[in-house]
Amino acid sequence: MATRVAIVGATGYAGSELTAILAKHPEVELVGLYSSRGGARGEIAPALPHLIAEPFDLDTLVAANAEIVFLATPNEVSAELAPELLDRGMRVIDLSGAFRLDDPAMYPSWYGFKHARPALLEHAVYGLTEWCNGELKNAKLVANPGCYPTSILLALRPLIYAIDREQPVICDSKSGVSGAGKKADLQWSFAELFGNFKAYGVGNHRHEPEIRQQLHLGDRAPLVFVPHLLPTVRGILSTIHVGFLHAMSEQQITDAYTKSYANAPLVETENWFTGLATGNISPVSLSPWRSKGWAIRVVSRRKRRWALSPGAEAGTKKAAVGSGDRRTGSAPSWSEDR
Image (cartoon, rainbow, N blue to C red):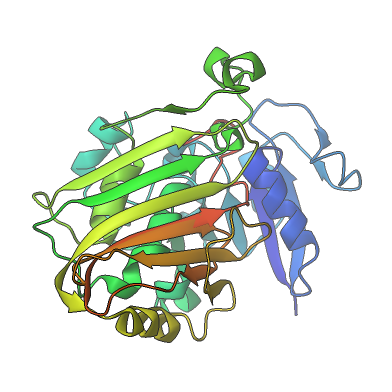
């Protein structure tokens, strides 16, 4: 029997992408597609003229009798709406950042609002699927990872046991502009972006505490996260530099990734970094530095495929990791949570 699914925020970039995926899923029945509260009735996307979103109304959503509700909505909207849906017995998968952080005290400074239901944070499952260890099956509330964190965490989780937390973890990330959502803003306009390339949110990007939390870096381990905006529609590429606690050979590093993602169909390991990826596979390429095995560079593209570049000296203790994505990223539909 198909699972009854509703999507709130279905007309945004992330919401329409999600709708297109679920519309083709053999075990999903879409019973409700909603735009913003007070919005107009309209199609999800030109390529999906048969799928129509209605203005959001909670009573209408409840009457649809959905088993699972996806929220592709802004952080504050998700924080208020998710508890109401959970109280009515629905399962919620939230694409915003409303439930990603464990500590409710961090929301005012990083997200700009006081969390309405902080008790739910300890029950939310962080939905990085390759590293959930079976938690998703019975989860009532899933916090979808942020776009940048996904590229960084997929790249570094296989090495987390070896990372030297006394050395800085450096994440140099680039993203396309669709992550900003469909809001009208001069800084995201064509004239401002075409032929341009700039850093933004340095030192205050809301994905920083999420990255720190999921890598178990604590408060003192140095993390340098610099996001950049590319003049492209979509895609993410992260180049990450980390130091190791002990020297590691190229084969040891390769084995760590191969073992970690042996049963992960959306992550592939390859031998060379080949540029931005397309589709739902995330490529990652590893480039160990010739520094007596104490560093490595990883390039991660959020399509979820990993690549190793050969030729490193044995005993690598530093690395740079790269990860990238040609998907839309975690763009809420009413506004964006970059």
